[in-house]
Amino acid sequence: MLRLTLLILTVALGMPAAAQMQYDDAELQRVNERSVPNIRSVFVEDIIRLLPRDLRPKAAGITLAFPRNGPNPLAFYAEPSTQTIYMPLSSIRFFDDVATLFAWFESKSCQPEYLQSYLYSLLRKGRPLPTPLKAFSIDREAALADAYTNDVSTKIFSSGLQFILAHETGHLLLEHTPGVGAAISQQQETAADLFALEHFARLGGVPMGVLWYYMAAWWQDPLTAARDSSSHPVSPERIRALGERLLSNPMDFSHGENDPTNEAELVRQMATMVLSLADQIDEDGFLTLLPSEMDRNYPASRFDRACPI
Image (tube, rainbow, N blue to C red):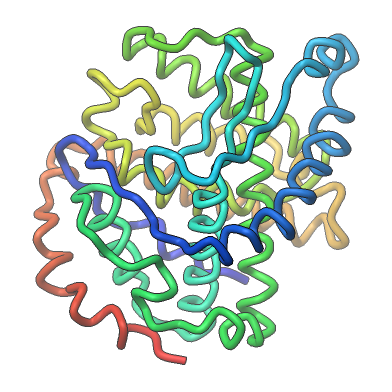
């Protein structure tokens, strides 16, 4: 069972900086060949098929687009005017790499703060860092040869992308409007999150990847700025709403699993940690913890030795 200790981490202040991932053509072609067909299938067979009947006709007009790159490493978004959900190949690969690292570090009991230091440096500070696995000198095939890493990373990646797809579908079906003020934007994001969680409730599956996705996403969408100006806020209120829904009935998110009772307990643990995190973030002084501690204690110069193969 996952320790879930990665959640209790500091979050920095300030506005996000743009960053790009430099994957070569061969890597992105593999994403196009291996991941895109599965994403299309999940969208049609799992998300659209399981929607309430009154929403299915409207959802039939939604299309998926897979450009090579987006404006940042986690550039998943929906365009209301064209009813299109954009899933850049580089963002898919980036999230896959991050999922692999989270699982590898957990498997080997390495210090997860190094992963957050990497994400902070890349997504918040915009530093020119290598792609995730290269930064930590982790060979993808060698890492995935470890049974635990392969199993957990697959669950994080697949459920995380499914949550993203359902979230963006929610934006379109709920007719959310871009370019609105912060308060309305927060309401829209929370509504889309809950829409996505209801998909997992219909599916009866544990939304494991949600936690790891937001542990990365909040670095490029700062919690403090979200309350004032961010158009895609990852706020304490938004995180709390996720935790409250998960905790309200954990069995909703496990009845389709092989061992519903055991998985419901995992959902309950996840929800408790999410709520605890939201409370800590909301406390006065939490966000003033010096992010320089990451550079001092978990510097980029040690990334390649943080969790060796």
